[in-house]
Length: 457
Image 1 (cartoon, rainbow, N blue to C red):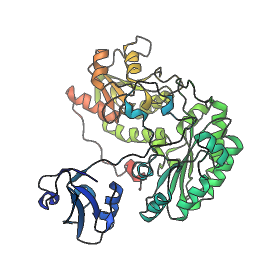
Image 2 (cartoon, rainbow, N blue to C red):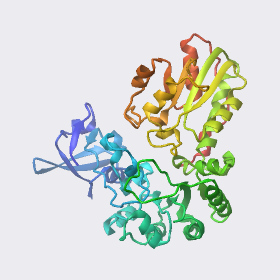
Image 3 (cartoon, rainbow, N blue to C red):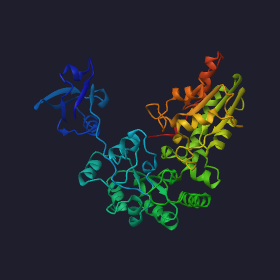
Image 4 (cartoon, rainbow, N blue to C red):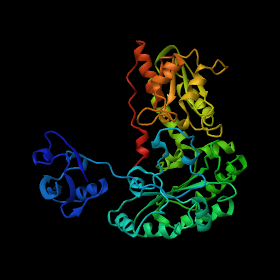
């Protein structure tokens, strides 16, 4: 791994390491990526480690104190990402319009990112060496896209006739002590019904190696020209799926007695059902997959709203922008949590997704231009008179760009509104707005409970 930079004043600099050096091994363990480094350093019981590297082809070595990998004082070249070779019939990337930034079209299929970031992989590109490494280095848990345990149907869904048998692959991992979080993307008429029931039964047979199962509806955009025809999950299909998940909620339990099988929030909303209570999600193992996200939001909101109970907001009007599917739930949650705050009016404004199609209803996939057009409209739900407009933070990537490449400042400029913020915490954003207006805020009440108590690992 090439050294790109060496931190000034670090042990690595004092030992003589330079940019351009090639890190080859730590002690006797070869290193090829960040996981190798973390394994070599993290599992060392010695007070020092020996870094073996090459400079212009000449082997060298230095001895450094055993520190956490991020404290070595080295910036190394990023790991190359292993891409996915499948042609999934429902691949969301294939349904994006052309002309977006190139990073949006990267199809990663890297088991290392499954371990480090929770990205889902299909296990179709793992070699024997990969399996040995996963087991030897205990890369657990992994996140696996199963979809179905019927291999013929799975190969059809993945567009890969050579995909290995999925249960055999999963058992190889779980028998070796690796726990797996799994997901099933439901495509009506293909992997639902009896196929779905068999899949849940097969996954339950993995025992304690199965960490969780997320069941999510297929996501379809209007950009499917030339792609296989697929049906969306409608209300009746969503109801059947939820009922099956609820039956299996008691059939695949964790050691703590909590369910392992969960349906995405979207399925409950499409079916016209209330999402389960907060406690039904246990440790929220599939939060990033849209499982329990609404109850998580509601709980976080309820706790943070305590800080505004004794505040007079002085007639402040706030507009909260979101997707169409969860707008009613979010509105009800806000009304309930903030009803004791004097002088505060909150309006939830749903944005129709015209960029990807109206069937895409989640806030994280809203395009900047659709937000702009909604903010400029003069309809009954127009936020034109709002003092503060809050956009969903998840609609922006780490570079501050929406799906169609707009920044927050560009949205402000296009709408002529300065009081627009991207909010990951609605209450905190309101508090900051009130402080700027000179409102005196009380100290937040002391409480022994935080939502993080429900997350252990």
